[in-house]
Image (cartoon, rainbow, N blue to C red):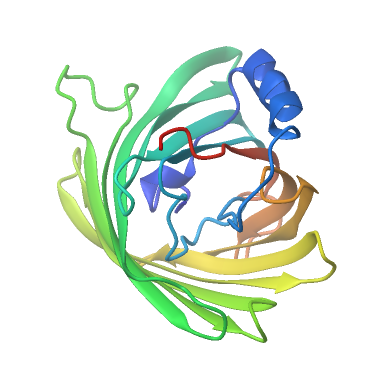
Length: 250
């Protein structure tokens, strides 16, 4: 999951490269269940990680004036509650610092089946240490409803998000939204495309590809994004890695 600091949870980039390399190697040893990824989409899906399993979504996003390194570990300990705790480090103006710390909970009320639909609820908190100077853990609060719709036996899936963001420093409430799609091109490769934004300002768009190196265990992806109506100001490129574990508890 994931709204470019619009839904704050979307901004976590790879920080622990040795861990990721080791995890890629180990992931190939397991037989995988059917689990599909949200990364690289910012628009969230109405799915959670498998029961008693974990995932790590990591990516690097290169923009015009900064480079961000994200890591979003998430686990599902109870069967229908995915908990995410992670953060981002950003390099800009010759400095690298932690810019985002995110904690989020996600549940679904209806499971997505082939040619069916699902919906859920996400509640989270994003703290920006460079902006939120106090020592309190509460930053920007947000909640949104993700909905997903499956077509053609899951070969095309449409996602929609609608929610609310409370910005701490300006003390403003904003409506956030997103619409995205996943289209299967081959057995392992998907095309993703989306648009997302707030109730003010021009929205953003992003498109790219997702490929399973090890089906339902190790995924790589790449995207290009920009703000509508902008030539170079808001554009970014990203490359990501997603790792999924087998069930670790009986």
